[in-house]
Length: 273
Image (tube, rainbow, N blue to C red):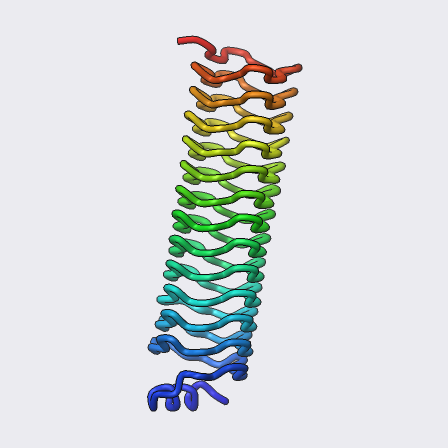
């Protein structure tokens, strides 16, 4: 089937195109509301400017596809989106559970309340994306770029965030329990009121980051750069900060009971008002 045939049949009222082959086809500025493209081969296809609201693309092959437009409430569960381009798209309320989004581009996209749990986002570009209240539990964000992204209220429980770029990102009120965040780069990021308990953030960079009133109990924070970070009122109970850099850090009213500061650099750190 080619793009023209699909458009003609859709305009006649047909919506079920399960397992259709539209590889490398081009469809632009088309309304395909609630279309069923489950298990379709859409690799290399271009859907630029399309309206795919509430469309069913479950288990579809979208490798190297360009899908830019309104994808709110789209079903992309278990889809293959490797190297897909979704830049500047609206994926509010989208379901992307267990989808493979490796090397995909979601820069400046809206993923508000999106379901991304168990998704593979290795090397994905989510810079400046809006992920407010999104579900990213157990997602693999290794080497992903979330620079300047807004993840306020997101759930990242048990996520893999090795070497993830979170510079200038907003992670306030997030749930980050038991995250594997070794090597995170998060200078100037906002973690205020976030829950990072039980996480492993060894060798991470949190220079000038804001952890005001955050929960950081039982964390591995070995060799972390907290220089000039705001840790005021943070709860660091039983955390390990061995050999960490806390120069000029703000620890006013922080709970540092049972914290391991072995060989940590606390030069000019503020402990009291």
